[in-house]
Length: 349
Image (cartoon, rainbow, N blue to C red; front, top):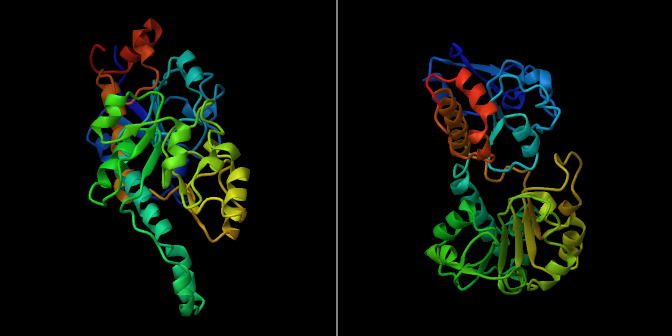
C-alpha cells in the first residue's frame, strides 16, 4: 500500500533565522501543485547533514550542507538527495548508492546564468572595469590612459569542460567576432565539439593559445589541482583565467604568484579551495583579479529554475516516474530500491 504523503525536506540554509526564505522564488510552487507532497524544513543548519535530520523524509533538497556516509547511515524511507545545483563534490554518491538513495543534480538549470556571468567577467577583465572604477573613486582621472582595454573581437576563448554551461557560453558569444573557441574535455568527441562550433584540443594547446581560459568542469580526483604552476606557465602573458566551477581545480598558491608577478593578465574567481572565505582573501591585494563569494551567477531566474528542476525530481518520484539528472541510475535496477520506491509512489514504478 502506498504512503499517504511524500515528504520533501529542505535544508535550513534556504531560510533565515526567522524562518523566512532568503530567496524570492525557489520553485516550490511545483511541490505545492501536488497535494500529496508535504514540505518540511530542517530545524537548523549544519555543515553536514546528520542522520536524524532526514528521519521521515522521502526526499531532501540540499543547498550547501555536505552529504556523507553518516548522513545516510539510517536512510530508512529516504529515496533521493537532490542537489540544488550541478556540483556534487560535497555529496558521497557511493555512500548514497549503497544506502539505496538516488542523487540528482539540476542538469541544464544553471547554464544560462553561469554563461552570462562568464561573459560579463570576460568583458570586465578585458576592459579593466575594476581598475577604472577605482580611478574615479580615488580622483585619479588622468591615470586612465594607462589602462587601455581590449575587445573580445578576434580573441580566443578556451573552455575546460564542454558541458552545458560552456556550450551556452559559446552560443551567447556568437556575434562578438571572436575566433573559433577551443575546448578541452576527455569525455567529448570532436564531432560533438564541432556541433557547438568549438575545436577539441589538448589542455596544453588550449592554455597556450586561449586569450580567456574558462573552467567549467566538475571537481573530481582527476581534476583536483588540474591548473597548477606548470599549466599557468603555459598561458600567454596577456591571457585571463576564469573559474566559476570549483576552487580545488586551481592551485591557488600558484595562481596568486602568477597574478602578483603579472605572468598572466588577470583572473576572475567565484570559488575557492576553502569556503566560505571568512577573512579577507589575499587575492584582494591584487588589482588584476575579480572576486565573488561563489555567487556570481546567482540570479532570481537561476534559483527559480534550479528549484523547479529539483522539485520536479520529487514529483516524478512520487508518481513513479524516473526523474532527470540522476547520478546513480543503477539503483533503478536494484530490487531493494524498487521495493522502497513502490511504497511511496502512487503507481507502479
